[in-house]
Image (cartoon, rainbow, N blue to C red):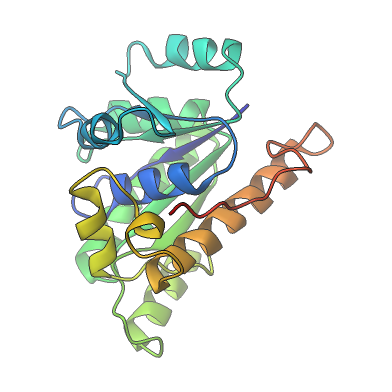
Length: 225
């Protein structure tokens, strides 16, 4: 079992959107632990009913126990959705994670906020991967390139997968779906698939020479209809 923490001290960057879309597109046995008191991910999971992934409410105090139980239950992958402006929850999630994802909108204010998370990771001896979210639809946007360069300048790796501000992400969450279910084969689904494949690749490198998190007989991405 491997663990991905999605962390940002800035609100409105799309942590939960990233978490639930990635979790729903993964073909393995996946758990989302929602540390945010607003319980957006958990409420989304309730709307889904019996559909995967599993979603549970957690706290910083119970996180290690939740992780231990998830491992005993043989989950393949755990995503931890953290709240904004909550350094304790973010630090706890980052500490237990194999990979830390930092969503960031392409704006100066968000870049300034990102420095807080970067400093936290340095104290923990962890590295993170920046993911540009809510980016302009236009693919040649200079602000996206500038943001990615700034992220690298802070000492983080940056994913080549970009999550753009598409309505499919907003509309799908209303009734417990994700972009790939709301608009199968659409641009939003494609962006999530690219990000998921990037994450799986990074996890494989981290886990080597251990058994990879995704079994070779399974597809990396399974779009739902």
